[in-house]
Length: 81
Image 1 (cartoon, rainbow, N blue to C red):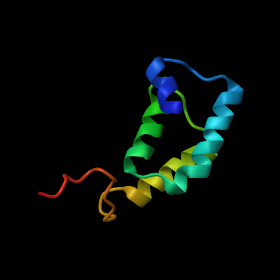
Image 2: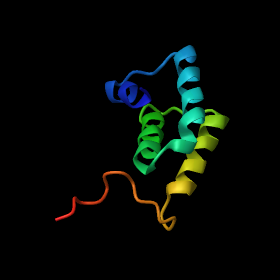
Image 3: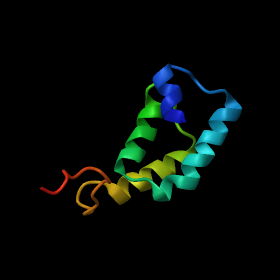
Image 4: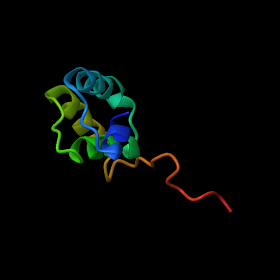
């Protein structure tokens, strides 16, 4: 949802933003590399800074799925031949 709003150039109101940040906190531990990057991009594009809890969830996801972790993002490998 936050990606779609950023793509459309819309800045969410306070209530929507609070709900989106709560969702980031809730699903942050489940995010793969692409999802975490998309959410970070979605906040950065309109110049929004995530709240403390949402930022902590994004940072934790980045550490968990970042380079050197052995993590492979879903769909990032070519299909077997």
